[in-house]
Every structure is written in structure tokens, then in C-alpha cells.
Amino acid sequence: MLRKRKVLGLAVTNRSITAVEAVAANGGGRVSLAAEFVFPDGAGLQEPTPLGKALRQFLRSRGFSASRCVIGMEANWLTAKEKTIPPGAAQSIPEILSLMVERDFASDRKELAFDYVAEAPTAGERSALLVAAPRHVLDGFVLMAQAAGLTVAGVTASTIALPGSTDGSAAQDALVLHLFGGGAELALHAKGTPRMMRRLPLSAAAGRGLDDGWLDDLASHLHRVVSLLPGDAARSAERELLIWDEAGLDEKACKALSERLDMPTRICERPRGLEAAGSPSPGAQFSAAAAMALGALGGRAPAIDLLHSKLSPERKLAIGRKLAWGAAVAVAVLVAGIVLILDWRSASLEAAALAGKMQAMSGDLAEAKSTIAKVTFARPWYDRRPSYLDCMRELTLAFPQESLIWTTSLAAQEDMQVVFSGKAVSESAVLDVLDRLKANPKLIAVKPLYLRQAGRSGREVAFAMSFTYAPSGKTWSSPDAKKPSSRRR
Image 1 (cartoon, one colour):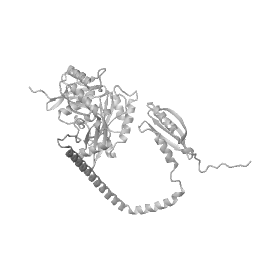
Image 2 (spheres, rainbow, N blue to C red):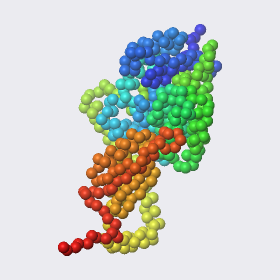
Image 3 (cartoon, one colour):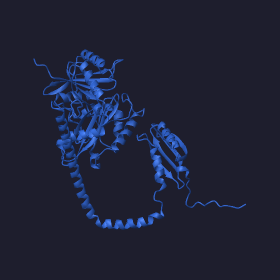
Image 4 (cartoon, rainbow, N blue to C red):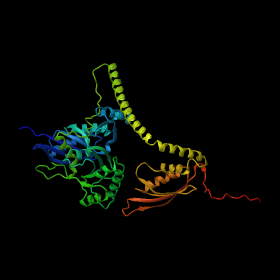
């Protein structure tokens, strides 16, 4: 009797591995076994061989027998960037992305592994998601699997694998929210293709509810990410939020999250086929591992596979060194020529469109030139650079790039006394901005006005500060202020 085909899905986190074994059945697949392997004391991903041996003993004790596996990684090990491919470059995507990799990761490309997934071919520009992972982490996964007696068929991202390897529940344009014990991850799928993936800066999600404010933080982060997503308003209105819950949130918490977000929200069911034969049905925490196992069993390659990259691999050719250098230079010149031609073509089309617009705007252009001449003549009577611009620049530089603190109101007087207020996620973020303002020699009389909790949830703080902008000791006065009079004794 022929042995049944089996595939093992492994969703790896910093502290555990969820394992799901899928077997072929009735022209499809089903889950036969599912278990969670928690790292033993003294073993971790930094020592993959001992960890792999412990994993092998665990799999044998639970009855797993598959020898081929697909590994899913957390987003905190990955770097994902969206890239734009010029029109007409379908055959040169690997070469174009290789050049982009050389430009963006020139200093550490040898230390990273790359792969990409691109949108379906269109007449215009299209997007591609470029994903990178540290090569030592990837090698550690392979060593761990080899020590466990497994052959690695692919290494992907667990969150990206969820909608692509299940029963087709993902919409064409959807946000995929993956909640698991270690935190939360978010991925954007546009036209059925991944376009964005990131780890949300949240603490562990397991056991969270409505009372500790974790749900408020999650909704706040989602609102900020959604406001910066690409696409027009029509596509944003059709976008759906799909929640894959492996953290065990209760129904009340999931319903509350759905009510706080201004978009259709759906709690996804477990992947089709997730029912273990002869044992209790596995929990929702095995969804990502089951999605990878069932997808590989059905012959579907992962959208992102860092072990088998679609980028042009480096190959050692059995030719002379001079010929190899010549071939490399020729390829580089050819690729550079293609990129330049595509860029020239795009620039030509854009120039033609701009020329047409200029011709249509000739009347407005003449009127604008007349206005510019009048303004230029009158401009020397006024200050060319308002002092408020420099003041606003110094204030902006004091704020961090992360979305930890923001302003809600600002008032500046003619004597350059500024009062502003805002909110922050913590008191430390407010104190950090206060220290930066005090350290700026151009800002004097920096004072905190108040610092208190904001709202009923108590997860944010409200604050207000004031300062005077005085570059190089300069002081400001109102134009109507009277000059002091001199008196003789």
C-alpha cells in the first residue's frame, strides 16, 4: 500500500512552534495532527541544533511522521517594502528588483535573504512587495529542521500565508489582522496580492480583554495604519478587515473591535480541513500552521518563499574569470539600458502630457506672470521669510518620528510666545519632548503647563507647554508697541 502524502506546517515564534500535519484525502487535504511545542529551558533559536533535537523528540512523542515541512516566520524578523514596477517590465522584474536591492541594502545584502510577490500584469505601473530576512535566522531555521529530521520545502511569513492558502475567504482588497499569543501583525492584500506587512507595536495578545486597554491600543494603531494606506477613496471604501484570531479573544472583545473601526470587519473561521482525525478538533491557534501545510499539500507555492527566491540567484559558471566578468558587465549594461529606456519612455509620456496642459493653461499662465511681476515689485516692502516658519521647524524637530506624541492645538503670538497642547501614549513621550525643547538654545522660557490622563480609558495623556522663540538671543515685540522714551536728568 502506497504511503499517504504528508506535509508539516510550522509557525515559529520567539518562544514556541505550532505544528500541524496535513495528509492528502479525497482529492484534497485534511489535518491529522496538531500540537504546540514550547521551547524547553536552556534551548532557543540562538542554538538551532539542540532546539531541533528537542523538536524531533516532541514530534515523535505526539505521533507526527511527515518528513517535509513549510516554516512560517513572525513579522518582527522580516523587512517588507512596497516597490513600483515601470509599465512594460514584466519580463525584467527580477533584474529591476535586484538593482533596487543593491541600492537599498548595499551595505548588508550578503547578510539578508530576499523574495518578492508582484501584482498581475497590467498596462500601467504595478506594485511588488519586497521582503527581506536576516540570513542567519533563515539558516537557523534550516539547521533546526535538519536536526529534527525534516526537509524544508519553503520559508514564508505566517501572516501572508493565512489568506492565500485557505478556502478563499480573503477579499480582493482586504486588511488581514493576525492576532496570536505573541502580539499582532497586519497585512494588506490588494487585488489578491500582498502589498504591505508589519508588526504592530503591541504587547502579547493572549488572554487580553476589554478592561486592560489593550483593545484600545489595537484600534488606535489600526486607525493610524489605515489612514496611510495607498489607494483611492473608492478602493478604501470596499476594503474589508479580516481577523484571524489565534490569541483566544472572547466574542465580546472581537465585537467591540468591529464597532470601533470604520470598515467592514469579519472574524475568519479556521482554514478548511482543520479537523484532526481521531482526536479533538485543534484550536484556532493552529490556523497559520494549518494554512501553510494545506497550501503545500495542494501544490500551491507560498507567495513569499525566502528559501527559494524569485530574484535572480547568483550562479557559479564553469567559465574563465575574464569571460565571467565580461558577461557580468554585459548583463549590468543591458539591465541598466532597459531601466534607462523605461525611465526615458515614462518621462517622455509625462512631458507630452505636461506640454498639453501648458498649452491649455496659456491664458492663465499670462495672467499668473503679470501677478508674479506685481508681487515681485511689492515684495521688498515685506519680510520675505516669516519668523513663524523657523519657530515651527524647531518645534517639529523636537517631536519623534514614531507616532508616540502629537499636537491638537497651537497658538503663536506676535512676540513669538507659543502655547501648544496635545496627547501622547505615555508620560515618558511628553517628558522626552520637553527635554528636547529645553535643550534647544533657540527656545527660552520652556514651561510645562499641565500633564494629566486623557479620556476614561486612561491609556493616553494630555499635555500643554509654552515657550518663547528667540534665535541668537533676539527678542520680538509687537509692531504697535511703544518704544521706551529717554529722559535727561
